[in-house]
Image (cartoon, rainbow, N blue to C red; front, side, top):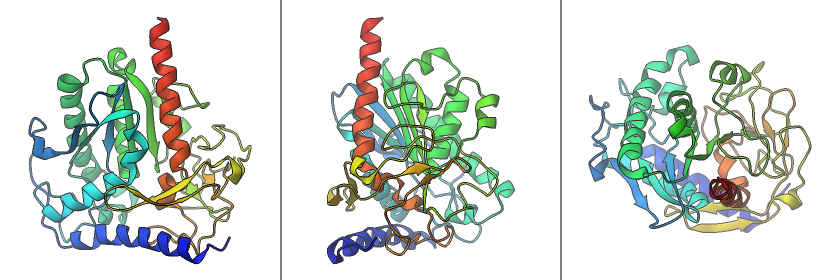
Length: 337
């Protein structure tokens, strides 16, 4: 599909935002040594933003830190890193803003240079990132939640961190009962993981609660990626028709793709940009109505046709509507008890 010139310009402007996030961070210093104190406001990108809404969202930012020589985790005291972190969070924040009060901790996320390593070598730096995320989440639960419905959300590395939190913290019944849904978008989760952690459940429809919502977007030709390696099958749900089989959703079912500026303001909205269907072998979300030429991967970590950077953007309005649907279902179920 060829884009109108104005739309193409808007898309490329969005890609420029991503590069501007990453380029200043290449020379940042090494990570700090200690888990941040999340009682301090300075360690939160957003803390209770949104006032008196019916629920909270705990959001985990995607990767913006590129890394440097001997530096594999984002320094907490680096101003450029924090600025990039805030911009990346803003680009997805609007999906949750209408439904939930927003919490988003800064954390010593793993850099892009970690993902350039073989997968079996990445864990020390991802584990360090998770230490911070878990500490922030524990602080939030103990000091802020007060029994409110909770949406857990993240993208890319943030989705990985969400899944780690689900495995680690949500076997506890009191915590599990708070969960509206976990939107772990842009990272894989497998049947083997569900077997190892039987308290985890994948979403099976539009309005089930206490579940994980996950998908990875790619072109129909893609057979291997950093996110879903060849031979791996990820579990997922289609964010347009909310089915877990290969039933396709047409682009007419897509209420709107949205592209934002630094602040999260939507600058371009394209209703009916693309449909989608789940690949029955890979479990990836195939996106048939756009082209890799118009939506390039930008980062060398991803091959052509991997639409990772657009997971939220392609399905922005559908996801935004779904957060409200699941929250409504959760509140109705609580009221009926």
